[in-house]
Image 1 (cartoon, rainbow, N blue to C red):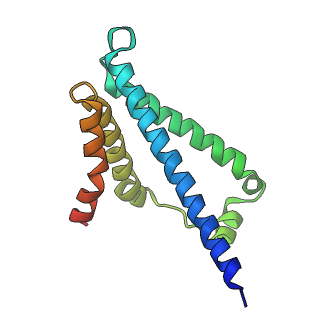
Image 2 (cartoon, helix red, strand yellow):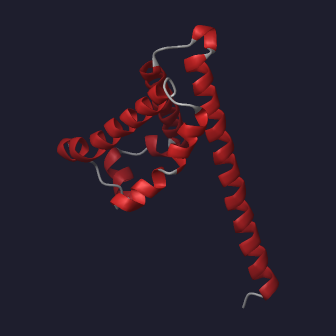
Length: 143
């Protein structure tokens, strides 16, 4: 039986954990918005190629994800693929499943990032932040 004080301590710790991660997300989000706006409008006269920034962003995500898989999945490399799949319960994707499910998500994510970066050329940071913050309403409405 858990005492009342332990229960409240666990709830408080979980609440603080959520608060810290939320504050970090907002801090990085605002920093990235201001940085992108600065690059696209002020850096050496303004960098007029927002899609290039999106491409570099995607390449960095690719490289970091490959490094994460190599670093965190080292124990999987020594086993055969069949054994690793059987033990982890992960199924292999067929080419058609990959093309119908993973590729559309990747393409729309890339388009979202490219459109966000392109918008910095035309709108102010406050307007961008308001639209970005209200995007959850569109998700809720269309779901």
